[in-house]
Length: 118
Figure 1 (cartoon, rainbow, N blue to C red):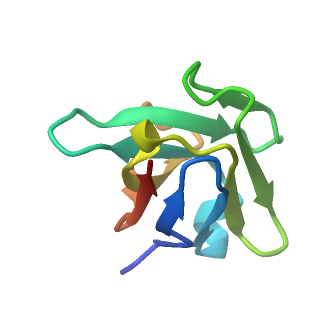
Figure 2: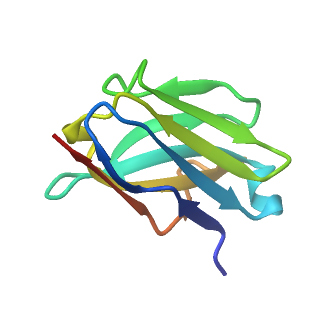
């Protein structure tokens, strides 16, 4: 059963913006911290940003000040607003959920591709 569905990826020029969305099932979303990860071709997956159930946010140094994560509990959706995009932001972006009590992120979306041209 699909739990997380991402959307919003695409092709954008350097300096541009994109907003990614990830919608989860209500029962999952209301009891989970949410994060965005990304994986570039030939590289390992890396954590990008996270938001707790209470709305506390954290960012990787590489995106601090350019990306913003937020969650809309009424829509069971987490967003990643990406501004001032750089070619090195090109990757497949994945939404992930970590349920209360879980030690790792145990639900993952299918990914959405982001390509930033120079």
